[in-house]
Structure formats: structure tokens, C-alpha cells
Length: 427
Image 1 (cartoon, rainbow, N blue to C red):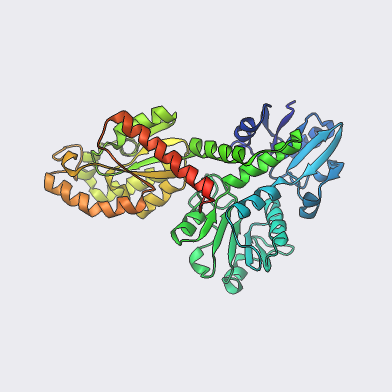
Image 2: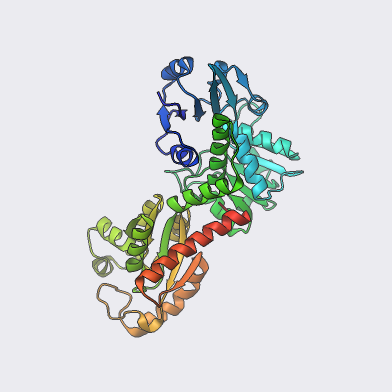
């Protein structure tokens, strides 16, 4: 039996093993357990330290000899340490969320807070909000019980909420196209927090970003709660620079690097080199569209027109964007649909690769919209505002391949580092 690990029901998408093995010199295993297996596991105590996730955060409490004050108040445990045969329970979700709101300077005091969801994470987050002296905390559930309210009641009476916190699985992979509420219905909302960490930026957070609100997604909370659990396991402390480094490493590993720009600006060539250097998988969206249609792009345009091609492009973009750790080269017209951009932003940093107009190819039979130099020039001027608006990073392709690839990677590193070091609007 493993000395350290995570127990729960469904663990295949967990990042816990990756994080813990970056943190400390121990093996950390994912241990999915049924209800029947849980009792035997807890009674044998054949572990040094474990984390607990859905649906066992409350189920494990009767097996414990000691529960710390936060866990007791919350009524849920996510960290258990075996000390000489005695089991000690803690709740580091509390620590992770408390870190998140302080790092991002979220103003909880005297605010009306909506907590979406009514599980173990919601209990921890309500405790943090109480300790930060929120004016009112309302727990919202699709199936309300105890003190929770329905979404219908929220829309009827509580659209004046100041802070919205999602603790539900709505918007989590693979259902990344969902969000629990529409922020347009909450005109007073000033901050949005989402504990979901896959995708990196949920659809809810993406809407908050577009509205200019303070927001943060769940990766940071995930890492800090893991660090606090490790500190309980090993009875040590973790410097801030280690927290920042783990967060940086995980974001660099999981984030998709998405190249947008004009046809023939070099997205595929540079993307392949970036993928090689960053040890990510390379995806050419146009090639994926051709596989989906079982036709070439010129054939799709000739037989069914651009509108059908754009529908296919959106379908494929949504599917590819749900994955992580990719380098994606997009077709030049990807920016014609905001739906595409929103999908790519869930897990990606968008890099606009610009190139001098006289370096772009025309009369290329494989590019139906680049039929002449005039067509390319018109397209360039029409699309430029969108490339600039939607990109996180801009790079001019005016030097050699290796330099541009290295520059792309460094700019992504700088972009992510800026967010971490400044407590930026999203992590």
C-alpha cells in the first residue's frame, strides 16, 4: 500500500500526483475506492498521509482520532495524517481558498456572496467567507436542501450579489461549454472565483474577464491546498517562491500555445518547432478539419462553401481546445467566430504571429481565400484588428525559425510569470 496518495471515486483527471511529486521526495498514488473498499482501507491505516476527494470528505470523519478546528467547523476533511496509528484530519481546501482571495485581493468583507454548489468545497469556502466577515453568504444549489437556495430564487431576489464563487462541477472537463450563471444578470458583481481547474480558465471566468471583473480560476487553490497537505504530512513549511514555481511549472505544462495569424505567416512551421522545444503535442487545425470532413479544404470550399467550412472549423476547435499541453496552429480565419476564440482561451494563450504583408503568399491553390495579392491585402486589413484584440502575445515573424520559436516560448513564460507575481486577474 502506498504511503501517500489520494482517495476518492473517480480520479483519472486529478492533478494531485503531478503536484505532490513536484513538492516532495515521496511517491504519491491515485487510489480510487468504492464505498465497500473505503471501510477496509480506513481501518487498516496502511498509509502515512492521504488526501480525500469526492465523495468521501465527510464519510472519513468517523474513522479519525482528531479533527482540526477548521475541518470540524466545515464538517469535511480532505487531508489525513497517520501519526503512530492515530488519524488526524484537516481541511486544506480552506487554506487554498483563503490564499486565493488574499493573493488576488478579493474584497470579501461587507459583501454579498453567492456560493454556487453545496458540497464539501462549498462548506470550506463559506467558512473562509465568514472569517473574512462577508455581509451575507448564500449557498445555491440545483437541488437545494438545508440552508441552500435555488437558482430560481437567486434570479428572483439576489442579482445584487457582489461576489460569485463557483464550487460546483459546472464548466469542468469534459463539460467545458457550460457555466452555472450568466454574469450579465448580476450588474453589481465585482469578482468571480471558480474552484474548477480543468479547464485552466472556465467559461464563467472567461465571461468575467471580458466584463473587466476581478477573477481567478481553481489551479492556484488546487496547488496551495496540496502544499498545505504536504506540510501536514511532513510537518514542514513551504516558501512562497516554491508555491509560485509549482504554479508556474504546472501552468506551462498544461497551457496550450495557440498561434493565430494570416495564412502563410508561419504558424505551422513555427508551431512545430515550439512543440518540439516545449515537449508539447503539435496540432494543425486545418489538418484536423480535413480529417473530420475526409476532404481537402479547397474541396470543402468548392463543394459546400465557406459557411460549411466555418461550421466544421468551430466543431473541431471546440474538440481540440478541451485538451491541454498542445501547440495549436489555427487557420487564418479562426478569428471570424468569437465562439472559436472563447474555446481556445479556456486552456490556451493566444499568440498572434504577424508577418510583413509582402511576405505573405498569394495565388496559393491550397488557400481558397488567398486568390490574389489584392485579396490577401484586403484580408490582412480586415482581420488585423481581430488578431490584435484576441491575442495575449504579439510576435513579428521577421527572423529565423529558431529565434522566433524561442521568442514565442519566452513570451509565454513572461506572460504566465506576470500573472503569478502580480496576483493578476486570472491564474
